[in-house]
Amino acid sequence: MSEVLLQQLKKHAENANGKFTVLRKGEVAVEIDQGKIKGFISNLVNDLRVSHLSTMTGLDLGQNIGIIYHFSRDKDMIDLKTFVPKTQPTAVSIVDIIPGAILYEMEIHDMFGANFEGNPWMDRKLLLPDTWPADLPPPLLKSSKPAEIRKRLHLEVESK
Amino acid sequence: MSAEPIQPKQREESAGLMKYSAENLVPFGPIHPALKEPEYFKLILEGERIVQVIPRIGYVHRGLEKAAETRPWVQNMYMFERTCGICSFVHSLAYGQAVEGLTIYEVPRRAKFIRLIIAEMERIHSHLLWVGLMGHWAGFETLFMWVWRDREVVLDLVEAISGNRIHKSMNAFVGVRRDMPEGMEDRIVERMKFLVDRARYYKEIIDTEETMLERTEKVGKLSQDTAEKLCVVGPMARYVGLQKDVRLNDPYAAYDEVPFDIIIRNEADVHALLQLRLDELVASANMISYAVQHLPDGPIRVKIPPIIPAGEHSTHCEAPRGEIFYYVKSGGGRTPERVKVRTPTLANLPAALEILKGQTIADVPIVLTAIDPCFGCMDRMSFLDTETNRQWTWSGEELRQYGINHYFPERAKK
Image 1: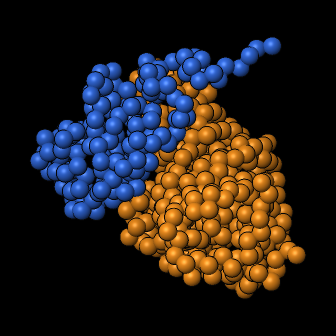
Image 2 (image 1 turned 120 degrees about the vertical axis):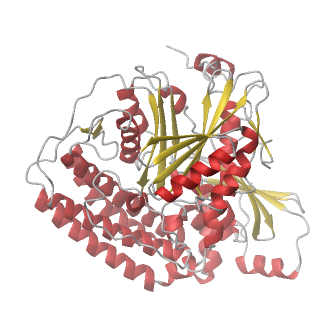
Image 3 (image 1 turned 60 degrees about the vertical axis):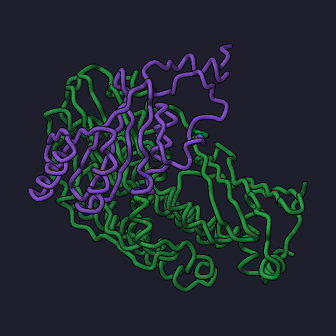
């Protein structure tokens, strides 16, 4: 990663009270508060010209749902980390800055139950069946058990 | 209800004469899981033109990410290889590289070259498959037959090296499982030469043959600005002039040692995509020839313990369809804590929806195939005209015929 980009990222992370870590050569992580994520990303896109969002990852962190935005520019990968509490899983959507994030946000919504405020398709399902029971925990949370899902969705295969 | 034949010309004229006040909703898919992947698109039409597209995927979601959390590291490699039935190798490569990044071991140089050879053979077979499908959907069956025959050439080579045609199971952690067979070098170089000749011939065909030109030129336009905002990857980025290729931008395997051409076009239509993929095929064939002639000696694999140290790592590779992304998090145990997979089709889907806007129904098969999606849901299509409440259903074949008739009325089956 070029020294210039590294310093600029560090500066932006400090301005947003974020924690900056170099994971390995070419990959850095920035941990940042949910409220400051939008400002940071718009700086990233407009000032630093890091515009390619590879994907967004959801994580089960126990009390919280972790969200990682994976940005990349050439050799450099920037993992932007944030989290929302499971009790109130409302995150802010970035589709107005990066329209390509729309399906990734829907995916996390389906798989972890996080809501993205501002995403126009939050009321739709992308991956889960329409018949997914509302009281069943989202499938990628650690509390969700595959056997329970099979039972509730009537996916059990009868053994002969 | 059987399909009522619609004369394309009449339809177009009526669309021009009277403005459709009601929006027509056309459900597109999701049918036939036996084909590649079923997906569902809700097309909202104004007359013949598409104004909005709403996607619905997940019909073949098998919960691989959840399954990975309960399986040992090594078993996951072969499970992730089965994510895709076309670009299988690159999945295990990306997962393998993500896990290798958490360990201290270095992949042997010979293994890196073998990985490159298999990955490029996979690209050739995937691109040929796609060119054939484009021929089929455009109504040029001869191209489909020829291209798929030539695809066997590369599949035979893959089988000779790995023992399998599609799911190669070649990767292992920190290396590959099988060495290149003795004395394959000349055969590979000769077969690659054959493929390069064929690719040049196909390029000549698509540049001169009226069928292909009419169906593909100026169809599927995408602006560079929109493409960048929608984070497109792979050939879909390169056909609008963006230099997005992981092999070049962030070399993995032996891509930093083997010279190759990166193909970038600016026309941004389906015709440019066809030319781009055929040119890439030639570039891949040249890379393979170079790699087998410069294959270094040495070990092909390092054995590692089954427990992977704690940490997280993200990697990307260039699959035939574009950037493929893996994120792996380890808690230091025998199974991963989280594995995230992002396939190129998901990244390119928003762009496909954008391209479809403004196209006609006749262009839907061409445009949807153009992004080279991993699906084959065009088996059945049902229409609902909200104005007259008339409903009818078309099979994939009827839709294909409709597309051909729309462009070439003189060829319409009597």
